[in-house]
Length: 172
Image 1 (cartoon, rainbow, N blue to C red):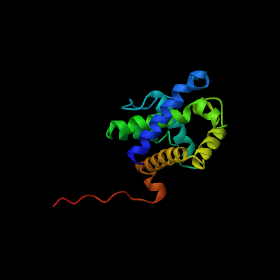
Image 2 (cartoon, rainbow, N blue to C red):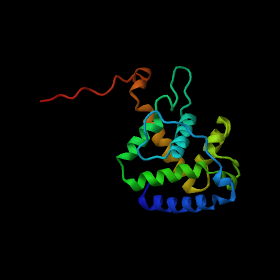
Image 3 (tube, rainbow, N blue to C red):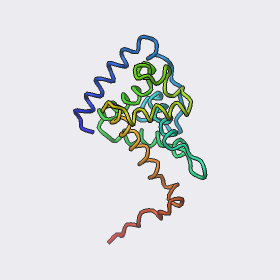
């Protein structure tokens, strides 16, 4: 995503979040406790990301869930080494998806994403994936891509997918 797109997204997200004073936008999130201390994400942002990671990678049939592989914690660590503006805008995107007012405006929900059932969360994510609005599809693509890359990069999955791991470096 280009910097200009992120700036537009950040501005738009700020407006929607600021408008949350109607009551819908101020509903509390269902907070999760990270397995390790967070570096850049707030606990609320982390909780949204962890919920999304669990919907994208719910686990089962011998596969761990996104939470079991600490996808959200690993992404927090990744963003700690990135441009601070990128982490801030990513956090705003997470809060925009979490916001009940945003859900109400798009006819999806009237409570925060983290408080919705897994089935409703799946429907919400699908609506962002196929939205007619570029910014919603862009947010979904970014979050989905980061969660998926982080999940499948986990060393714990190598045996299950038949990947022996990287070759050892030869020092010469």
